[in-house]
Image (tube, rainbow, N blue to C red; front, top):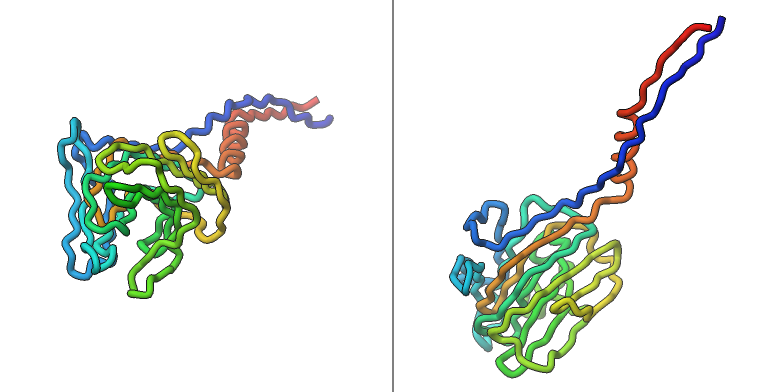
Length: 240
């Protein structure tokens, strides 16, 4: 007499869902956001919901010249700590406090001195789109500063105009978009993971329709598929 194991495997369908978050600020619920302030040197930094056709989030702060571009702040999601991520938001510079301002979106955010940023800056004559990083980088004045990775001067000033900024970070590749047009595609190994959010400094900036998509790790996806298949495994022993 010998034992034979028979059974079947129920093959599961691997549905891998992205961890998405979106906020159009209509609900007024900002409980998932937290704010870090940097280089304020006593300058007042404020964030508040205001009406601009719909409810939008407005950040304000910074020194006028020649005091520098201080008074910066970053609103980030406390629930996100990701490596591969896509961040998107509508951004409008309402007014300029200092032409050296950098306002936009951030990814792989740990603190004000460690993050990637896609920002806009300039005056009523010129706007510059910049992809930059802060990796423990300080200005000669002792301020937390951004180290530029790429920049482009836009043909027209974007002051008072809504623009869509999007930053995709995958591995060591960064892709930056303005109004769904790819502007920068570069590689950088400085920062590995972190949160996502909004950055304002040296300006009054309005934000709307923020969204982020966290890309799942391949290993996690494979383990999820194995778990689904194993859940359908049924074994039976019979004697012959």
